[in-house]
Image (cartoon, rainbow, N blue to C red):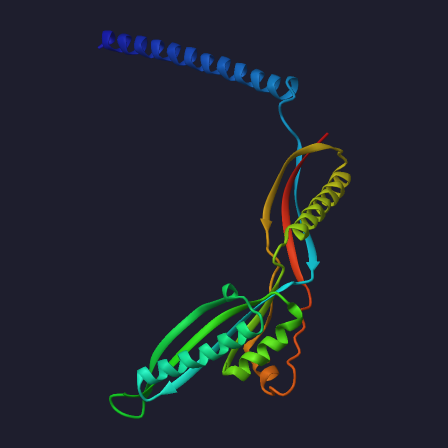
Length: 256
């Protein structure tokens, strides 16, 4: 029994000695790592102190292009009759547009449909007719003639004026101005933050254009257009106003 106890105690002594040696090794490695980190942080200057801000620039521009959605809806007992009537009405509308000098490439079909019309008072519901729809989008490059285009197409047979949007065809110059404004906005914010924090901006680390928007179209809705075109004897007033282009940048500045 004593031998067993002696062996047991001896084993414990060796285990304790091994554990102590292991702890000492860990302590030495930890101390070495701490010393290395401290040297890296204080001696090399690799750590960069920065301020990161967003800047947004907005520019208003006068539109030079309008897109108008114009359509016809025709109904008849037979599907073929409804389709034929819609085709004839749209052909009249297109010919009127071409007669105004609208280029054929600026007239694009955007919707063509033929749907049954039901009598829901019967059981089961029965088909009582058909509805054909034909819609085109017209690009008008002479802003002053937009109202006349609406009036002419309504006179020619269009019974759907679904909306109008204005845009700038070439936004390059406006985008350049918006970018400059966005950078100025970012620098103003960075200067304010730096002053509040008691630091100084010493350079630009990076610039990212985080989001550019095309000039946003201004829409006249369907109800407004219908009201404007209701009296075809009077010219339809159309006001293009201005469109807005926005550019955003993400800028990172080095500080000291």
